[in-house]
Length: 447
Ligand code: ADP
Image (cartoon, rainbow, N blue to C red; front, side, top):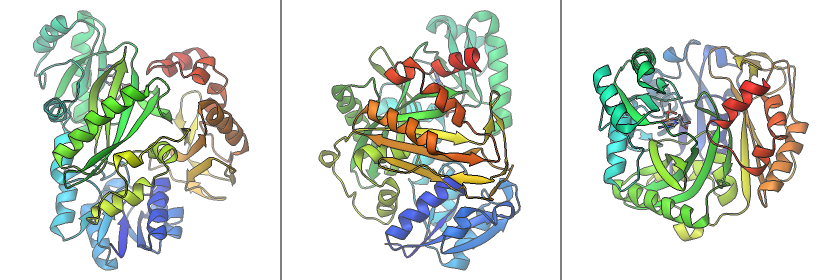
């Protein structure tokens, strides 16, 4: 097992990894930008190294700064968290070339799944059902029109290098496909430096269902059921739950089994998520994320497993500490993402926290790097906390979420908490009757 791990991230996910390290008796190294010298992860880790100025390009994304921090501190492994370098194959290669361990999958698997066209091809070969769409990249508007006419409108044009909901445009009809195609291309070029796009049938009322998988890197693989992340704003998740309220035990076993076998066959190492759209009882693969997800705690809650601990074990060459038979669902869990944003427009709202009080009690987990007097810097994303609840069933989890939200105090900045208070009054949310378009429609009417 490693003696010392460097965490190449900030915020709540850095704390999450530091906590797992401490419980495993592993020393932790935090890295931080100048803007983050007072951040909680810096205070909580055993050691901290400043790796650059405020801009994440020059700090949290800087390969040489992070590798140098490992060399200075003697860290043997790097945990990337999510975002930043977590799905950067070139970084993983350099980490390994320096004789360090990357806590995540191989560079090859990251590369394969990071390109969405290759990912869909791979999924198909592995027996995973995929969304109907173009056979590969769509080179020009004429091809897009031809394919869309065959497929039937509406269609969605997506960036091959996409992520975070960017570079995606829906076309309802032939009249608008040219604009959609050109916009998706230029957005993709601007965001990812790659203007390749592909096309899919646009599903009208799907749910977003994702399967958590884990591979031991030696041909073993398991699944930890699904999460329903259908409540989204601009293709970004805001509310996640496990198990999915619409998924039966039979469906779970079937799609989970397909995913676990695929992971085993790939020889995949560590945590991964296989994302699907689910409509009329059918699953359609959209992408695979080769990292720990923001919403992993809802899976931890219902399986009582520490996924970060497991990632570290597998990266150190140990066997998975559970088999498929050990993984039995217990109750229901919900997570809400608390962002420092001003409603109704969700404008980022950085600033000084004058008072912070985290909710507590049975079945409540608050993952946050906030503290009284902390100043949220304007340079990074607006997630300031995740409130996760667990109950014996969905109604109990919902009641607990409402109770816990009532206890939470974040003063000094605006947050998305009022959105969740409002959502918990909605009959559709209470009954689990929502798809990926529900929240956008609700926001248009209510905010
Ligand atoms: P990203 O990597 O940018 O998150 P995804 O491919 O995971 O992109 O898609 C994100 C979200 O966009 C999905 O959860 C869904 O809400 C929507 N979406 C993507 N593809 C389709 C599709 N074919 N039909 C309908 N909605 C889609």
